[in-house]
Image (tube, rainbow, N blue to C red; front, top):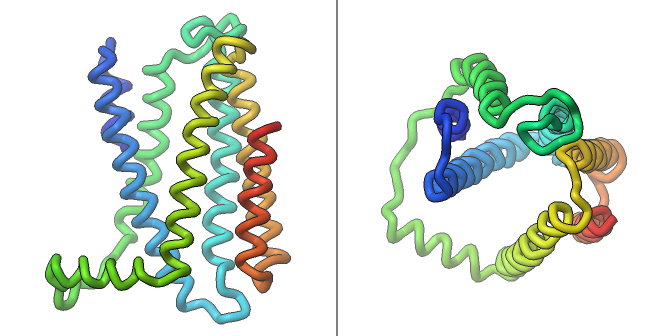
Length: 223
């Protein structure tokens, strides 16, 4: 992910195939990093007391969305100039914005990587055994139902997101400032939601919380 941002910052011009390849690699890298981070949080959450379980994950996501508010604000006010088709008389170019991302992420990685320690792996299961474990896991009703729900929601969200992007560009002529402020509001609502969950809903039914979160997300997306 950091390497892709560095390439976008260094390369003066990009062809469509090259840009598509870089963004695809960045997306895959993000998914791998995000899944690994979630796995670490789940493992650490298992050590929490039962009455406080979920506090660590909600705190992590509260920090994540709070930082997103700042990042989206920078994009909204600093990427709304002539290079990006905005209304300001000045603004960052895409390369300059990528350099900011590279520098910020580089500082965070440099400060955190030395403190990450992983225990030596024990006996490793064969690929066949891992596939059998995965199959048994997928046969459990709560697991496959959740997977079907997430895949369905994600698929529908991709359609609506693409339609929203096209409508913003072709019909409403939304500027980067407006898009950035909208993203700020979304991140702010997510941060408030994480705080409310940690403060009031740790002991609530996960089914009701999950359903309410999905419906609330779709409602705000429509707005």
